[in-house]
Length: 499
Image (cartoon, rainbow, N blue to C red):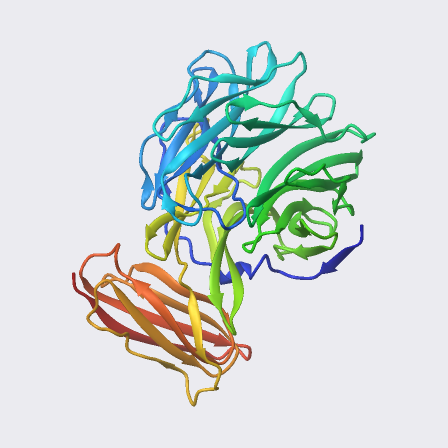
């Protein structure tokens, strides 16, 4: 398979064109917590969630146990539900969920978490099913006289889940749960002569059907590791293995689905340039074309653990523009950092500090607005490791271009209506191709919403602000543009929300 490589410090839009993560807060304390994992994002035409679920491991005495924490738009809704209580190893959980209907905002009606356990002496895979109210007792998913590891799960439909896992012999297996029954396992690497490992799985939707994709690593030598994938459309056979990454030593990092459906970004880390950084290969479910991009472009650091979630924003002309809520780990000679939009969220002077992170799929905050949560671990207080979280708020209404005529000057208009309850429109004009950011602040100067944060062509634009989730009062909205010749301009105006 021929791969087209384009040098882009970009994924979908650009790392610097995302909404800004707000301040970091600690969400667990006094425990050794690790392996945080939100559900893997499918194609965009999944519903909005009223809350999300995050699985993680907590050490209780000498044993790791599986917990699930519920996240609302403003943070955790509980301290975590303990899924496993037995005195054995229960570790490396992965979770998947969906709502009862697509295209609207609902509570989660079905979820499943799976993990590794040695309850039967060997490392087997167990799971628990969530019915929208409570979690079931743990049940066996894969039990054999062979060690298993790296289970990962995706949700296809309300009663339809799929998992992948690897065996001690270096084989990758696929298994489905359909309407209460686990179907037979499928060996996806039975023709591979070299051992394979670290599988990921995701689903993409198109019309009334779905497509599945599985990626995994193939160990070639001590200095070369490939990342491959296989895909299948609804009711078809798996395709032959194809290439995500060959050159250098590569590590599989999972997926970021393309908003429009039918396409997915396969993430991987590679040392091909002499230092580890993050790349993506774009795979289309209905064609054989592959395009490879550089996701993080910072040769001064080792960049790993990239996690992201798609956000659709309608702009220019009109075409679909795609932004990302993302974060990753940046290691330099003197530090380890969690790096989000616009810079570091966490700094540690230990270059070997262990950091794990996960990004959620978006929780409904108000009409046209979602909260995206980032959760990560950091080493604190000796042996303890707490979980920390940061949020970004994104307007899905996006910005609409209402005129392509080049205006006479850069301007920010007064919102209308004003005062308003709860919605108001903001219009602005730009003269040149510009990096444009439009944000809303409260009277204390705290940024409460990012309405625009992308590169725009000359013209007149309009964006909606929804104040449903905010109290009555005075607010300020401010626009900043930076043109290609690095000219920077700013304007700020006042608006009043009365409920």
